[in-house]
Length: 212
Ligand code: DHB
Ligand code: MG
Image 1: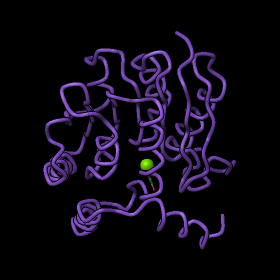
Image 2 (image 1 turned 30 degrees about the horizontal axis):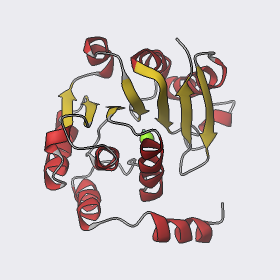
Image 3 (image 1 turned 90 degrees about the horizontal axis):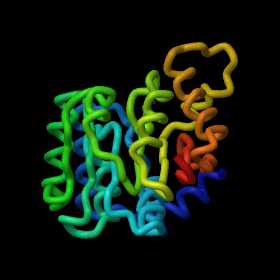
Image 4 (image 1 turned 90 degrees about the vertical axis):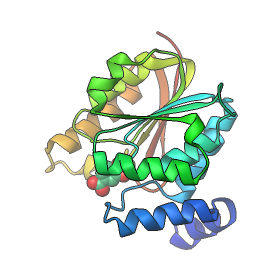
């Protein structure tokens, strides 16, 4: 899309409040890679979660907490509303916790430190939505766990469907590239979900669990 049109939409629909702007700035100052979602992507997540009346969301990959703020803000107050987010890197988790505190959301965010594949088997099923934004190699496993943990009618969301264009580069056989391709293939073909990709930023897989 024309960058000017992207900017037009972002400036009209995805304006950050001071908290989000500060969290993003601190994220950069801390030297974290600039791989967080964009404001427009955050707004899309917010709209989708409102559309299904989501109360419980599971996030894989909290990073510095920026996406978690967008997600948690879509939820009703606790105890019904609850974001469960998993982060493997201790430094990221510390920043994320600070971000949730600053946003006044600590009461509705449960941050679990650890590797997703260790944590996922300990979680009860029934999430209204799962947002996958973590390491790319294990994405086929993340797909399976996400579908298992979603309630019927729940939303499957996954960042980096394009992976900077790598998904259509036949020469890139890296484990990360193959992981993204595997997730996309499963999202497109697994009969338990109906999915597509919204071409926002680096591509967002959006699916609905329809069975199983
Ligand atoms: C990269 C980007 C992401 O949004 C992400 O979740 C992981 C990695 C990257 O640029 O490598
Ligand atoms: Mg991402």
